[in-house]
Length: 225
Image (cartoon, rainbow, N blue to C red; front, top):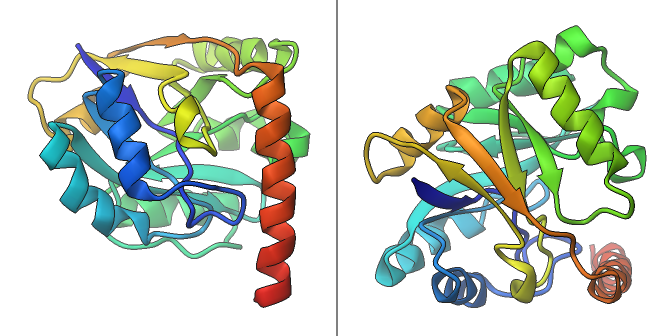
């Protein structure tokens, strides 16, 4: 089983803090086997991850968190950036055409652009997988709803830390039963549902720090844009 972190943000996200190098170092320190950096509508981390991760014995998975017209979608294993603002179904198609798989993160968290507020269950079920455990939670209710939805639709389940600072990388991981130690085999196994999830809640003090830092960086991003 490979230990895989599928949802992390670097300094290239408008609300992320740390460089790719620091994220990779943290992932290596806690024993992550494969890592995706999924910045908001930004694909720049993929090239750095491709260079740095193998030096630490980590399999790099190129990715990004795409803002579709309905909300956020993780694009994993893509070979080119996916444009934001497309219809939800068009976003899923674009991810597939770019050689990747689609994962719906925090689908039932409206405040964090979960897609369930804008698309129905049938449309959501067209994705390859659903993030059923996201570490950045208050009560856990939205995670339970995501897990129930994935089970009812026979969808693959993933977990992710949704870390916006390096210290929280690995707070939630997906254990993947892949046939080989490479990104393609891992993502094929994810889409096939050969996964189990493990995670713990981001401490509320750190969640507040991530949120406050994200607000400040988002403001700076808008000022300098």
